[in-house]
Length: 271
Image 1: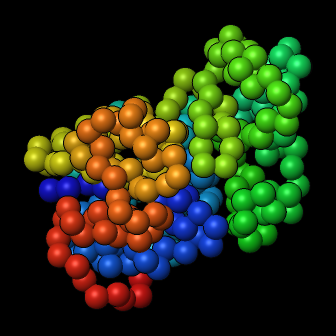
Image 2: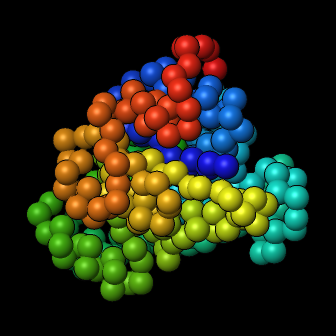
């Protein structure tokens, strides 16, 4: 049995249009073969719920760079110690409260003399402009709990990142923004879910698909790591030496990879 852990932006979703149309055959193949597709993203719960609905995915999901794992109630046939109930989900939290992250970022910026611009200081329209999102989707992106995306406005990046680390917080670099988090990352959340899937089925093989530096850690803990082709893929691949590299970028690369691994090509169909 396979399980797919996948990033969204620039991977399953086109980086600019956010279309997943080119990945529809792969999504269909996963569904027909009973392969769960676990979103592992910097996006918020509110954003991910929209993309689960649009793609027809019902598996557990990982939000805000490993800040929390959301598991639909009853998805696994055994109790989940440490999880808290939240509506229709059981939730395992790994992240730090959002306001603490915002405060740390502001402090680190002052101490380093390096100005930043985080989501908390942007209007919905600014986020939409910087991410190419629709206004409604940008509003969902502001509903953050465990991760603050930010841009660096001055020189002194190294000083800023050192200051963040000195305050006991982590940082990573995604496709568009830097992110400040607590003591969490995608890899920790993926390991947690891999253990649950293997408790349910000992033969599970984990596929990981990503495209950015923030995906490196989780790609190195799965069985089959895949890097989606970008202009920086060779540099990232040096940190994921077992990784396969797709021929195509974005959702087309996601699609070709999934079909190669889990089955033959399927005709395009609406999801």
